[in-house]
Length: 151
Ligand code: ZN
Image (cartoon, rainbow, N blue to C red; front, side, top):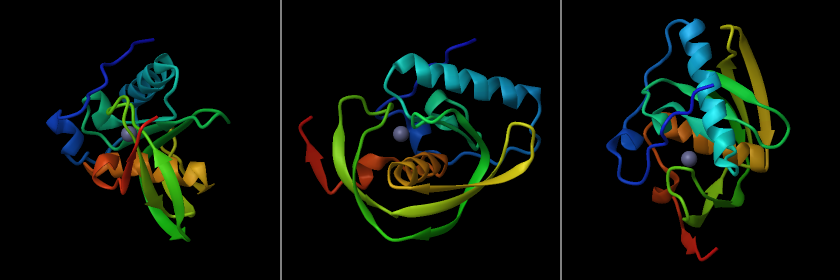
């Protein structure tokens, strides 16, 4: 297990788009495991994207309480509806705000063995998938907040 440093606030890498992973090899699997360890180590993280740990690779880990999901090169292939969310981010500690996200999304990705799979998310899972996939494009939730909350 290896923890990686979480990049925060004005670190420019958070605003930098990540690159497609060309080959899902043992190095990528090691990075995904490190990202999961780093996320769990925070105690309150539900997701982490590559550039949040300083790596410009299209990698995401998510655990919304139903187990760990590892995504390589994830893409939203369908979305519907709209929901009001309250969002925070491991890269912006202590900041919470209201956002709008699709109510439902379908994401296509490769698993840690390079095999394609799809995941459908509704509610909080849809919010989390959108938040993490935005990170890969260099987008951060603070730019989408409609109202900051004092939590
Ligand atoms: Zn985030």
